[in-house]
Amino acid sequence: MTTPSRRALLVHAHPDDETINNGATMAMYAAAGVGVTLVTCTRGEEGEVLVPDLSHLASHANDELGVHRETELANAMNALGVSDHRFLGAPTKKYRDSGMMGKEPNNRPDVFWQANVDEAAEELVKIILEIKPQVLVTYDEFGGYGHPDHIQAHRVAMRAAELAAPQWEIQKIYWNTMPKSIIQMGIEKMKEIGSDFFGVESADDLPFAKDDSFVTTRISAPTFAKNKIEAMKAHPTQITLDGPFFALSNNLGVEVLGDEYYTLVKGEKSAPFDSEGRETDLFSGVES
Image (tube, rainbow, N blue to C red; front, side, top):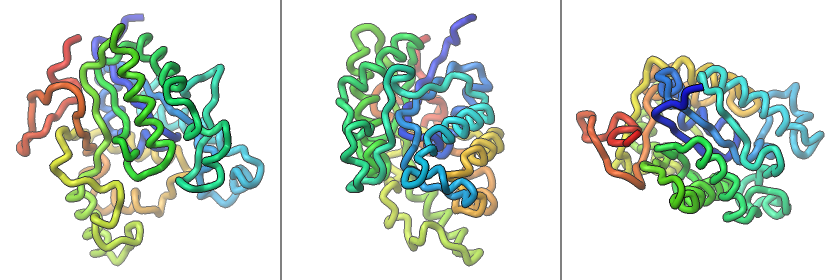
């Protein structure tokens, strides 16, 4: 099998994070023949179950949600056309979902939040040295919104890139970014139809909203918005069809779901650029 000349590694905390943050990007690059590898750090055992008939899977009940979400993730990756998706440490290690910050699950010894960063990073280094990605995508130091597993995924991904560097230097590293202007546009559109968006009045009220100045790169992939929607539907325990993401897609169309935003934190910002001076390709300037 021929190794793709362009290779991207995405590191996420739970199943569904990849679709919400990067679904259109992943589908676009996969369709273009780019090697896309997803590493998910936990199985999302502490997630809320939005399907009443599956409430027995929750961690406070039968604690079987993680296994179920493995299947959801596989279905989502099928929708995005991504064949290489793995769990960090598999098959020998397994990191459990840590739950929200300050909650009791944070203290379990087997949760990702309690993992030794260097040990977890070494598991990721194995994958980096195998696939040799030129591009890495993960969260910022706050994990987007402060979830322990997102913060830990950031730490592990960045440390792994550092540890792997003597043998393989990742040329460009990006952090997921959601600009305030886009969120505010969504809030205003939702207000117009008398609907609520996370119960907030302004993008400033949302912890994951970042000033637009942080955006260095925009991937515009409207053709693949449909793949992203199908991948979102593949995560029914976490994303409801009448929730804010689908409401946005109905009212803003592919503009929201087809555009994804990034902050370049390692490597040179390179052409081509859009009208606002943002990169339009994660691989711009990359050497094969």
